[in-house]
Length: 566
Image (tube, rainbow, N blue to C red; front, side, top):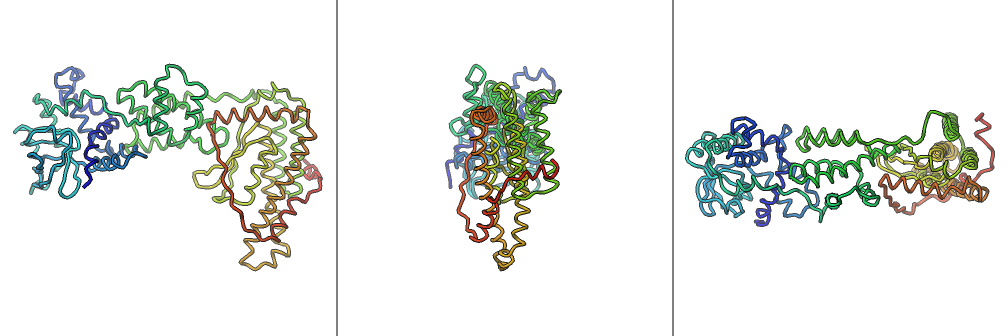
């Protein structure tokens, strides 16, 4: 039999008190004392409140969860002994018992077990007692929370809830409420250990040594000032659904646990997370969906695992988040006209389709437009712009050869790109940078996607594909597309190098380092950190791969977009 978990019951039981609605418990205590507001001044108020808190630990929500259930859900990463003790608390039941040294007799069932010592059973004298017990195995039981000794009248009251045939308490919650009301109204002093719990602040489920979010809250609680840029960047790094839910939950726990500075720190952290997620959403990321967080909070409230006051905190902070406008929109600026022109080209090209040669020709044409715009742009004009992001849905759950082009597309137009997994497990990409550059990158992505379709169709109509047996045709198509991606990437890099050489010394390319610094600063505001996925060597059919590579490299400049009436 494991002995350690019983010794952790007291500490974890105190943590569970943070998941109890103090308002509801105090309302119950007032009802026991006559239901008036002046009840809080009665001599028995500390006892009434203590017993009401104890009862509230076991009262299930509408969805059937107790404070112990909610504690267990918040214990990710805890030591094994803590997890085992939490499981015991979840299984604990209100029992009417007679205790004699280390003997336990259930007065509602006649069951006899060995009582494993805990601080609560050690403090009780022999005789009839009432409270929460956790069964360890077929032969052992432990007191999970403070026990209440019963006088004859209280014992008789408790026995009235025993089901016929000694089949246990008919309703443990109602039995406890009746017993505790009797104790409070008759000014019977329960065990000192229970009374001491009333005046002691519950231990918070707060582990700065083990939990990074708790560590940040502890640091912010002692700041005595507003967080600086480095500290804000730390908080932004947590931005996400789970961290925000944890921060909001911790606000209420800290408030109820009498830790206002800690509650304030969690509130500030939650505000930073909400602002960061709102920014990410505005920039095309699917990981900043605050509506999804709101839905999860509502589900948690309905299930009893999230306090209603947490929704109020969330709504208040979300309302406070004001995203500043990137730039005035009343007059059409040169940048507006450039963005609109790229969008118009994109719409027309997507409608008409294009070949790989036309895609590269269009990329060069758009690059010329961007550089021409940059010639008349000062550093001040550039810094007046705000970064934006646009999300690209792939509708695929696995990477494909075209994904090898994403980084090159972004670099060609001075952007950044990253991938993320959408809620439906499909892959999506975010192009991020200055407005015109992002529009151009998305445009080029669409062109290359169309080129993949047309060039693959041409390959599959050719001799190599028709000559392949059916078992190798899928591999042949994949090999061709890998080669096509390689060829397009090489051509785009060559065009980028030529563009940089041609524009050397002019504003069109000289402002690129400033763009990079602006993008870096904005990405820091988003709290984004990335890692490169390692790529494995792919087996290809050499003939098909070389055919795709040649198709990607084959390019004689002709303004295909202009020939189509752009």
